[in-house]
Amino acid sequence: GQNIDQPTEMTATEGAIVQINCTYQTSGFNGLFWYQQHAGEAPTFLSYNVLDGLEEKGRFSSFLSRSKGYSYLLLKELQMKDSASYLCAVSDSNYQLIWGAGTKLIIKP
Amino acid sequence: IAGITQAPTSQILAAGRRMTLRCTQDMRHNAMYWYRQDLGLGLRLIHYSNTAGTTGKGEVPDGYSVSRANTDDFPLTLASAVPSQTSVYFCASSVLAGTGSYNEQFFGPGTRLTVL
Image (cartoon, each protein chain N blue to C red):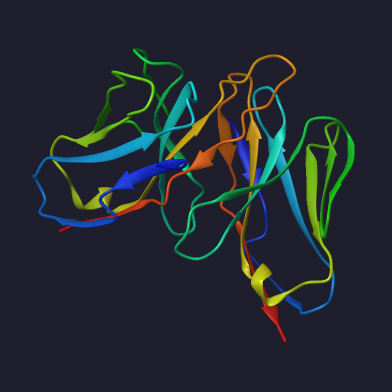
């Protein structure tokens, strides 16, 4: 079967760095997405990785290791507005997205 | 319109009633999707359409139907609602992926549906 695993909840301090991990087992791989979802809102796109390595975009970076079925999202200089759920999704062999349950990130002052 | 719109924003529905959730996009995307999101679970795909005139079943299609008469609209119908269909429903669209490209999905604001 297809499976995406990520921690249910994480807590971090404003100004700090946090890493959210995602492991996956899917039928085929056509890239991995990270989305941000604030409470009561729609998911919004953060990053996409299809090759191994690190992709950096401002305060956010995303890493992929295809051989390990592993990705992480790194958030630097945390701000209160970063409090949200972070969703990991893998594009499978049919280009359908398989979604993890999401990681709720709580930022404390 | 800019992006994707959904209607209604929220709805309370009696069990057994028929309900259509509306979704319209103005980005000329080929592919459209319907998801439901429940607490503790990931987004689950109900139905999808890769292009106007075609539809496909996702992970949880039972009790739902869709149509894609044109590029812009992708309505989701619950023929006879049941309490287990209480959920938040998201419509999304993307440029259909091909080799070497990716299919970022853009989401509508969601419809919160309660079936009593």
